[in-house]
Length: 70
Image (cartoon, rainbow, N blue to C red; front, top):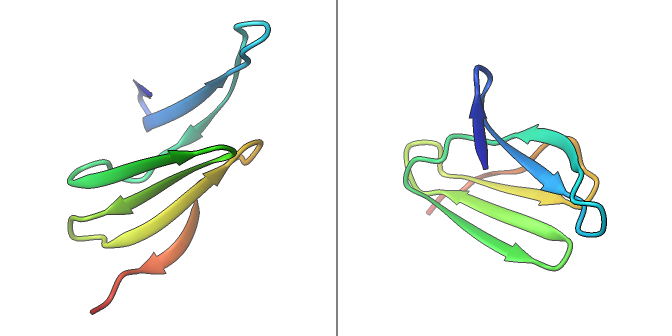
C-alpha cells in the first residue's frame, strides 16, 4: 500500500515482470481489518463507517457491500 495526494492506494505488482499496474484508491483504513484470498481482497471498517468492501483482481475500485448493522 502506498500514499499519494489522493489518499491511500493499493498497487498490484505483476509477479512475472515486477511491473506496477494501476493503483486503486482504498477506503479509510482506521480501525479496519483486511483479509486476502486468491483473487480478492476484503476489508471491514470497524470505525464509524462500518462498511464492507471487496477488491477483485483487475478491478479499478473497491466494491462496497454496504454498512454493517446489528
